[in-house]
Image (cartoon, rainbow, N blue to C red; front, side):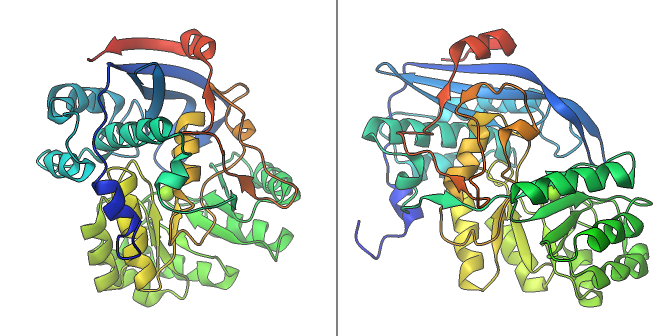
Length: 382
Ligand code: MG
């Protein structure tokens, strides 16, 4: 690849492979512990997977939507509708991935639906080339940093126990969810017990500018960042809040693509961006955002959606791309599922790093029997 061609430009030129069968398979896996945010608490993961079969090779991708609209307006139901009725009809073998993406842009929003197809095709291309996905994304890499996102807990003691286990494990950063009434005292408790850890909070949009004084009190705890303190769709008010805080704001929900990231940086609405590949429409847009931010000295990290081993692997490969300089939401599988649908599970090395799967494609094996066992819906689209 000539030095003048960026990794994303190289991806844009890849031809869309011919696919024999495309299935949407919805699986339901119980979480080992409920995952609570300021908006909702999930007790199981209902994940919609895409299975692409071509010449005997099988590629998988995961739609990161939930069955409900409590993180994003997209749900598994809307994603199925958009994929089946509007996006898949645009997929033609031989067209360049960049042209496919441009065609998808006619569909307003629905990044998670778009990402499901785009990522699945990229995984299939990697498989056909015999390359691990991260090699297709253009960067050699051996490992990434780890980070645990801890949902809301019933008591501070319960939270401290989870943090303690995570710190002992060697996680590179700890994120705790906060909400109104479950914030300052809880952060103080964690900070007192663990003065040296890299700690951050995520409010999932629970506050308003009227809470500025309260949010300013978080400055004393030396947090890496405060994620999405204000509304899920806001950028402007975050720019007003950021001026009032020493702590960096990180935007998650309100960044749906490169244009939002550019707006946020231009307004000074945040100093960090959480790039969720599903939310922004796929791996290519994720890499564009990471590159744009890197050129402006703004770090990004890969956010998680409590994915199964399929989506988790996609996130791991993505974090080898340029710009992903902070630990993301990538944690051990055991924090989420007793038995995932993919092997091997994600585990931390003794130094807290996560090894990148080296095999072709995702580099993890989706276990057919477990998918069948957990499937609640299976639909052949093509
Ligand atoms: Mg978040």
